[in-house]
Structure formats: structure tokens, C-alpha cells
Amino acid sequence: MKNKNMLQPQQRFGTGWGIWLNRLGPILALLVVYGFFSLIAPASFSTARNMEMIARQTTIVGIAALGMTLVIISGGIDLSVGSIVALSTVVVAWLLQYAGAGPLTAAIGGVAAAALFGLISGTLITRLKVVPFIVTLGMMLVVRGAAKGIAREQKIDVDPGRLKWLQELLASVSQDKSWMLVPAGVWILVLLAVGTAFLLRYMRVGRHIFAIGSNEQTARLCGVGVEPVKVFVYTACGAFAGLAGVMQFSRLTVGDPTVAAGLELDVIAAVVIGGGSLSGGEGSVLGTLMGALIMTVIASGCTQMGMPNWVQQIITGCIIVVAVALDRLRHRKNA
Image (tube, rainbow, N blue to C red; front, top):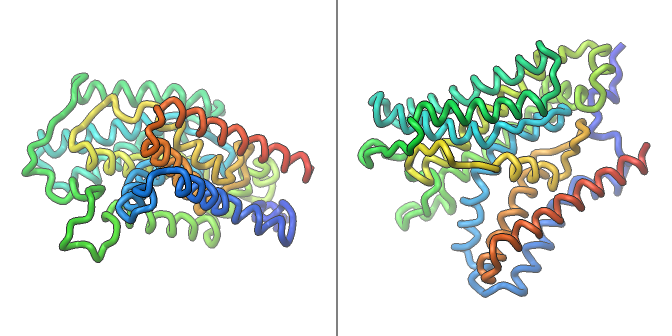
């Protein structure tokens, strides 16, 4: 017999105001952080131009974090995201420069290569019954090595004439396209977020992801296909990271096997700050986007105030610790 509460565990903590506070907490946190820097940072921080820059800088982490949201809700983790982003930039550049592929084909190739490694991770986790931390830690090294091998341990430069619209995905909006408000890459992030939120809330696989993260054994007894769902989740995470790599390539216009080192930490932090639980069973697309925006706003505010990078890292680290501590306290209170 299927347990209805297990298939919708995202609603198991509190009722009424507690649920709304849980959902709106990341938004309130973003408003507080933005308001704080609006008061103490230079006037340029609150300009429309800087807001566009914040949106552009959030896109790469935001897209990769959507895939990580699925993984963390399912109770897993993926440490290979940064390496997959680097691999995607290398594959895109190689296809453009040496295979004569068009921009769309190259972009699809980069995403497909990334999804393949995500599929391998998911298969190893489910078949070998090895914890995700170990598998994805190993995959992080494997993928980074593959990227360096394809690029022969150097950057792959691409002729400007082959780039076409790829270089405009995260470029500042030109005057003749001001109606777009933000670059196409940001709109792609918005569309992906809507699609991911729809999957989690209205599709069966979304309910199964929550159920597995909440209690895998009970989900299995309820008839959930745990292994196929996990493989899907890690494949999707790889694909999202691959698309983030396409955005990274758009920003750099080179295939760089050393890029995005440590990006997986920013991606995980975005999900955690946004309310995702490392214990599984909790998380939301909106929260993840707010988490990514919070980190970007902090970085932008600190930069405009002339603060060194180490200060930004300390602030972000403290926020992550507080977010995890609050999550644990909430679990103990509702235990």
C-alpha cells in the first residue's frame, strides 16, 4: 500500500506559518542581503546595470545547481560538477575548432558528453552500491583528466567566426536588443527552473525523488523504482552541468580544462542556502535560485566595496554553516 505522506515528504515539516516561512525564508534572506549592501555599498550597486551583471554571474552556478537540487533532494551528492563544466567547455571548443561543427551541434555535444558521465556516476552508485560521495569524488578526477586529455593539457582557442551566437549567451544586452532586459542565457536559466519545478511538483518522477530522499527503504516498499530514479537524477545533474559548461564557454570563448575548479562547492552551497537538506527529502527550485543569487549579491557587494576575495569567502562560508545548523535544528525540533 502506498504511503501518501512518503510520496510528498516536502510537506512533512510543520503547518501553516511554518510551511510558508520555510518556503519564503530564502527570498527574505535575499532581500535582507540585497538591502544591506544597498545601504552600505556605493550607489552603483543598486543600478540596473549591476543587477543585470548579478543575473549574468548567477547563471552558470544557477543552472548547475538545478541539477544538484535533484541529487540532494534524492539524498545524494555530486562532487564532479565542476569537472563536468570544464569538460563541456573543452568538448564544445573541440567540436567547433577541429570537427567543423556548428554552434548548436557543438553545444549539444558538450551537454551530451556531460550527461554521459552523469549516467556513468548514477550507474556505478546503483549497481555497485557505493556511496555517492566516493563515486562522484572519483568521477571528479576522471572527468577532469578526460578534459585535460582531450585538450592536450592546454586551452583550445576557437576562431571568432565559428562562435556566432554562442558568445552572446551571457554577453551584456546590446542597445538594439534592450527589450530582452537580460541575456539569453539568463532566460534559459529561468525556463529550466520552471521546467524543473514542474517536474518536482507535478510529475511522478518528482514525487519519487522526494520519497527516496526522505526514506529510501520505505519508498522501495511503496513501489518506487529507486535505481532508475537515481540514474535519472545523476544523468540530469550531468546534463545541467554540461549546459552550465556551455554558458562558461560563452563567457570565456575558449575550452579550458582547468576552469570551474571548486565550482561544485558553490553549487552545493546554493542548494543548502536555499533550504535544501543534505539529509535528503527537502529542497526547492526557488530556494536554490535564491541561494545562488545570495552568493552572487554578496560577491558583487564586497567587490564594489573594495573588500578582498577572502572576506567574501568567509562571509559565504559563515552563511553556509548557519544554513546547515538551522536545518539540523529544524529536524531535531520536528523529530
